[in-house]
Every structure is written in C-alpha cells, then in structure tokens.
Amino acid sequence: MSKVIIDGYSLTLEAVVQVARDFYTVELSNEAIEKINASRRLVDRFVDEEKVVYGITTGFGKFSDVAISKDETEELQRNLIVSHSCGVGNPLPEDVVRGIMLLRANALAKGFSGIRYTTVETLLEMLNKGVHPIVPEKGSLGASGDLAPLSHMVLVMIGEGEAIFKGQRMSGKEAMDKAKIPTISLTSKEGLALINGTQVMTAIGALNLYDCKKLLKLADIAGALTIEALRGIIDAFDSKVHEVRPHPGQIKAAENLRALLTDSSFVTRQGEIRVQDPYTLRCIPQIHGGSRDAIQYVEEKLMIEMNAATDNPLIFNREEEVISGGNFHGQPMALAFDFLGIAIAELANVSERRIERLVNPQLSGLPAFLTTKGGLNSGFMIMQYSAAALVSENKVLAHPASVDSIPSSANQEDHVSMGTIAARKAREIYKNAINVLAIELLAATQAIEFYEGHKLGKGTSIAYDVVRQEISPLKEDRTMYIDINKCTELIANQKIVDKVEEAVKLY
Image (cartoon, rainbow, N blue to C red; front, side, top):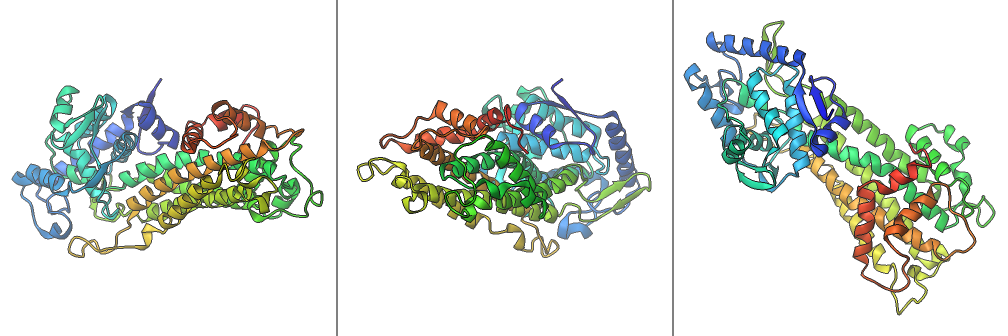
C-alpha cells in the first residue's frame, strides 16, 4: 500500500522521498494519537489554571515576560503566524514543501508539543489531498527553528497565505475550500508547536542527501570510464592497499572500481605504460571515499533530526512539566549540511580535473579536445570551461553558512545556526555537480572512440551503452548544451546507475 504511518520515532529517508515525490499518503499511528491527546490535556489544564508558561500564557521571544490572558489566546496564536510570515524569494519546490509538512507532523506525533490532534490531522489532510502552501525559500536563521518559512505553511491552515492545488496557484482559503478541508483557528501553544522547529532545513537536506547518495555511485562510474580512456593503472585499487587504511568509504569506492573495470582491456598494470597515475586517477578511492564517509555522517545526524522533538516549550506529560529549552536550534543540522555541500563539491572538483586530463593532449595522448579536426572544430574545449565555471561556483557555495551568526529578537536569540542556508547551498552544489559529472561522462565516452580493439569493463561497458543510446559520438562541432542536458537527465533519473547495477553490485 502507498501509505506511510508516522509515530515520531521511526521515519526513514526512503519514506520521506515516497511521501515528498511519490505522493504516498500519511497517517498517524494509534500510539501517536494517544500521546498527542495526553500532552494537549496538560496544556489545557495549565491554561485553565492561568499558570505562567512560556508560549502558552506568555508572549514570544523578547516578549516572553508579557502575560497573555486566556481570552486572548486565539488572537495571540494568529498574530504569531501572520507576523512571522516574512519569507522572501522563490517558492520552495513541491517535493520540499511536502517533506516539510511530513516532518513537522512527525515531530508533533511524538506527543511533546501540546497541539490538538485535530490540528495535526488538518496538516495531514492538506498533505494527502495535495494542498501545498507557497513557502518562500529565504528568511530563516535556523535558530528558533525555521520560523518564517514554517509560518507560511501554517497560513494556509488558517485560511490565509497562498497555495498550489492541482497545479494552480491560488489563495490559501480557496485551496482549502476546493480540497474540502476546513480551515482552523489556532489555540494555546499551537502556533509555536507548528513553527518552532528545523523541518525546513531538514526537508531540503533529506531530499538532497537521498540524491547525493546515488551520485556517489555515478561518480565512481564516471571515474572508471575516465580510467579506461586514459589507460589507467588498476593496481592502485587492489584491496590490499585499502585494507591497510580501512576507511569504509575508501574501501567501498575501490571495490566499486574493481567491479566496474572487471574484464577491461583498457586498464594497464604498473610499469606497463607508466609507473603510476596522477592523483585524480590513482586516488579516486580516497577522494570519493572521503565524500562517502562524510555523507554517511550526515545521514546519521539526519536520522536523529527527522525523528526529534524540536519545538519549545516541550510538554512532558508523565512528569506534568513544561520545560523551555533550545531543541529548535539548527546547529547540528547546519554543520552537517555544510559538510554535505563540501563533500559533493569535492566530487565535482576531482571530476573537473579528470575532464582536463581527457581534453589536454599533453596529459592524455589523445587528439586535442577530443576532436580529429582541431582548429576547424573546438570539440570539448568549452565543455571543460563550463565544468571549471561550475566547480568555481561550488567553491564559493561551499563556504560554511554555520560559521556565521547575527543576533535577533533584541539579542534574546543571540546565536543562530544559518542551517537552512547551509541546506539550500548544498542543494545548489549538487545541481552543479551533476552537470560536471555529465561532462566527464561525455568526455570519457568520446575519448574511448579513439581506441580500437579494446574491451570495456563489465560495468563501464553498460554505462557507455546507456550514454550512446541517447548521445552519439562527436564527429564535428554541434550544439553541446543539448548533449549535457541529455546526460544530466540520465544521471538525475538514475538510468545509468540502475542499468549498471543490473550487472554489477555497487556500494
């Protein structure tokens, strides 16, 4: 069944993708419903007793010392949402918005937020019926959570803001009416419960991580084809070399290269043509492996965050306590997503250097820029330019967002994470990286055309065939961006990796 049941503790990366991109429906578990109701009863009791509790009977941020009467509760919650809806920039993509809604509901399902069950159900009904709020991409400090973008999500729940429904942009009220979902009036604690959290940065990061994990295999495939095109030395990938420096990612990358290059007559042995290869070939396991290990670290942190309670204050029903803390602070994710961006930038960096080796006759021994009529034709000359521009941009984007902090809320929020910026930057780095790797695939397959009588490896032969089914060899100059776009699509839709994995197991 195309359904995901959430309980606040067991959400997986695959389930996030299924909901965000494949439109799986979402339901709360029975245990989650019980926990939500229990914490809500405690909130209601504190409101009735007029107990001073942050965010329930007080204002927010710098106004935490301002008491709010029971009669002003609904007005307080609405004011919170509309005043915090300060996002700017382009709307986040649909899959990200769906991921945000899912992750926020999963956090609420833990039962520490004090929200009403019916409010969570409204959010899930929007998700299941395809009411997607317009959430601007910029405006979050990632400190008291993703306050601004999450507020735009909640606007639609209360019949304000804007949304996409069945492919059309309209007012939030119209979208809710068309989907036959009643809008709601928020009551005590619910505004904070919905917007105090890291779900925007986490949704962006989770979907990007899923794609980046798949890009690791593609990078190994592209690197293996370049090894063949440059008659690389296979000995450097011997398992004995990597067992004595047992970084898991390095071992897996070396194993992938050995599997991809099985039965290849292109590869050479040390001393056969040259004694050793340059680092961009010889050190592929170490370079790609470093990115693999970084991505593994990011995934470990992300799994914790996806199933965490990140709002404030938190309701501990059993102890009958409400504690104001800082679980909304995005620092753990900010550092992780900066690391993710750096890891992917490095895959592109080394790929661009391999492209240079392919097109430079002084390094490759092949025709200059991989064309037989140089001068009349430029061949792959500007393909390397484009790759160089992309990796240069990535180097700027890879500067960590998490090292910056600008105090806000009259210095109450005096250290912020910038985690959502880190997540967005990492996504842009990924987009650039797949274009660089596409160019490497095109250059490597073009270089292979200049050889006769050689056999490609068990895995690389399949990758070559997939590329050639869509893109013919370059015999004379043509409009090259079309080739890049076709190859990028082959990467994005996983066609190359999927076909290769039918014959070769990749890690």
